[in-house]
Length: 354
Picture 1 (tube, one colour):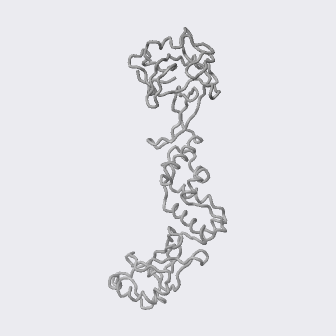
Picture 2 (cartoon, rainbow, N blue to C red):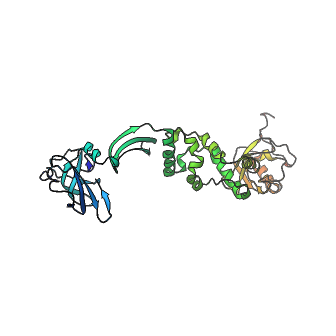
Picture 3 (tube, rainbow, N blue to C red):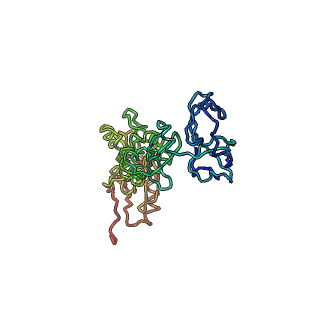
C-alpha cells in the first residue's frame, strides 16, 4: 500500500483491476503463502499472507516505487501492490489495485492505532506535536495538535543533545558557577561535588535541566538566570556553603572593593586588580582554605596589565620601583608611594588640582 504523496508516480492498467483474480487461500504470491483475500467484486484489495522463512504474518508493506505513465491507477490515494519489479532505487509496480481504507480497517482492526508524536522542529526551533492514524508503520492521517508541557520537555532535551550545550542561554554567572564547582571538585574530592563538564551535563539533562523546561516549547524561552538556578539546585546545603567559602566568586581587596576571581583555569585562578588597591598587602591572597594562591594580574590605573605574579611580596620589593618609574608620569593623579607596604590602598584617583 502506498499514498499518492509518496514516491509513487503515474502497473500498466492492463491486469491491475483483475490482479487478484484466481488467488485464493493456499495459493502463493511471490514468496508469500496466501492466507485469505479481502475484497469485493473480485478485486484484489489486500492479502493476508505468511512469510514461510520468518513464519510471520505479513499484511501491507509501504514501498518506494512508481506506476507506469499510462496506468489507470494514477491518482488513486491508496493502492495494494500485488506485483512489482524490484529495484533498490526505483521499483516499478506491475500489478496493483485501489484500496478502500474503510474495508482495510474492518478486516484488520487490530493493526490500526492512533499515535501521538512529538518532535523538535529545526526550522521553527519549537516543539511540534501531531496525532497520527496508522496501519502498522504506514501513516494514514496526520494532524497537528497542541504540544503539552509533558510533551515538550523530552523533545527539548533531545534538541539540546542534538545541538549541544551551546544552544542554551549561558550567562556569565552560570558559566562562573560551573567553573567554580569544577575547580573546587578538583581541589577537594571529599565534598562530592557534581561533575559540571560538558559531557556530564549532556548525559544528565533529565536531572538538572528538565525542571526549568516545563511549560516551554522553545529553548529561547529559557532565561539565563534559570540555568544558574538549575545548576545551583544540584548542590546540597553543605556543598553550597563550602563553595562560597573555598571558591568564592569574588574577594575583598585592601581597597575595600570586591573583585571577581576567574576560575576558567582551575590550576591558576586569577585575580585581576589595580596595583594601588593592594598597597599594604604583603602576601598573595589564597583560597581553598589557604591551599591555592591566586595568580595576580596587576593592572595600571588604565586597566592594562603591568605584571603577572603569584609572589606579591617579591613584586613590591623588586619590580614595583621600575613600574613606578615608568608609569608615574603617565598617571600623575594616582598614588605612587615610595613605600607601598605602608601606603593606603585606594581605587580612586586624586582630585584634580591636588
